[in-house]
Length: 248
Image 1 (tube, rainbow, N blue to C red):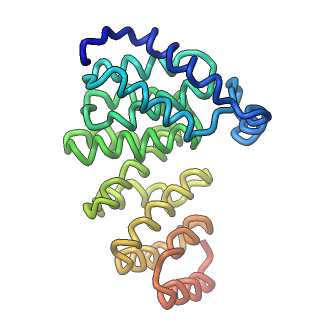
Image 2: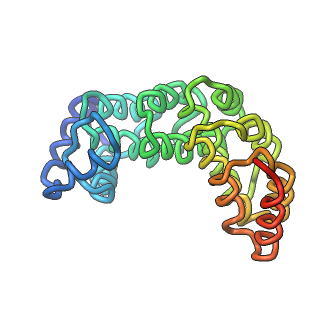
């Protein structure tokens, strides 16, 4: 740590102190309404939180996984939105040092976050990148796909995104996760399946067209719209015409 002593709680308070001058008048109330959150808000835009987190990471130098997680948990504590965003940004920025052993903590934060603005980066950026680097992370993420909490199930789906973007899609795992969820009524699950299909279509449009065609009857409207959004126009038109003849 470059010779600098480190106290996670003190480091968290120091970081939050640097966030307070970045508040934008009126933004706190607007964000609170938009996110429908019971947390308190300072009104600091995400780029400001991110820059502050990166500056504090540089201040302390290289930190191991245990220290990063302890700092993130200290940031998460309390009822302030920006603290939780900073915790997620810290884990995202230092995800390279995290291991499958840290996924239990990530899962706890996903459950506590219970909203897309925190769940999505925790799953797609943190858990998914741990999984991309460590194959032994997937047994726990597999359990997420069957969890009673729909935010945890969404996290399993979005954890597939880094592999897709890196050109290493896990088709079998996607099918095991997504197929049982196609009949779910929860919007955030329907949207997540479509999001994964949309990302897959950038790499393998043929697979997405074929999978979508096979599951038209079970697929919700929001899933279908996302699935065909990036397909070649002819494929999208053919699937749209075929969908009009079936009843989801």
